[in-house]
Image (cartoon, rainbow over all chains, first blue to last red; front, side):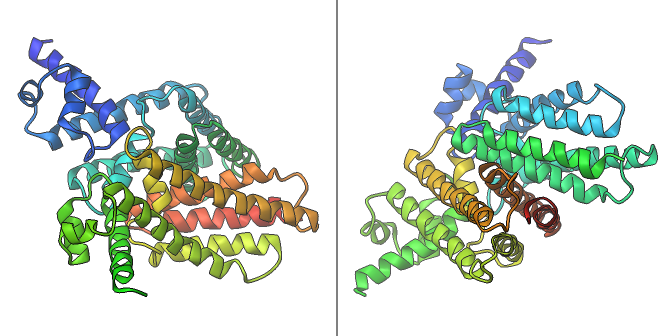
Length: 198
Length: 198
């Protein structure tokens, strides 16, 4: 890797944490200088501007988070076990976040809901869509293999799963208390066993 | 009401919408001037600074939202019916929000999760605590009257209810699509009938 590429990656990693904690609009030049140990001129030699850096940082944060899900979801081939493994990943994020500052997709969704970067909003939608698609596919594959009840509406379940776990991530962050996330995880686990598993 | 008090209320109402849509840190002086039709000097004659205005605007936004819940929750005295009425209020917010820009408490929770105003964060925690307490009290009163199953853990149910509905509010906002909020509402309704109602 070239020295320039190494510096670029260092900036993206540091900026991902700053933006996820502070917010894209609220993060200042000095927040980014402090986190990277570089002057603004040195940072923006590698990026066209703050939005380009924000998008690279968002992609990095989402990549770190998605890596945690890939790791866990290979445990068992059974669809319901895989969905439970996803719940367990959320449980683990309460104590060991992929990137400090909460869920990068929810953060970007909230920050761009009426203003801010349209490109960032588009990235947030596409990330959330990948997650919805992943859950929907697990349900539908499970139905095809007889592991999941036929009356489960896959798209509605994906919305429910993500609403519950993302909302709980917000509550757990607000209080600095794992309980809301654990309560949500327990509920989705129980729902998976009583209403989803065939 | 004095002219000064009238102007102050006008500023708070307009600022509540700006802050809820754009964010507290991201909202600029010209956003506030445009929304209020006043110059910055005229705005800050009534407030000690941006934080004081932000707190008043937050309180106003939460007040508008809570008024919607009070309105609905008086429908029936039965605890489970009241909880279902709260779900219906969330359904209504999808098409007719109390304040444009999503849930003010979630927005403030996300924005202040690692930076921003400590006073605003404290306000967000206290608002969410009022809602958790209201749900918990409904469950416990329902248990005392034999309307709610004894095995429902009131605090866990309050966390689940708010996680699910707030997370769904975020997804519905992200996509501009009512379905995530309707899916979450349907799920909580079904859970209330199958696992909460005695």
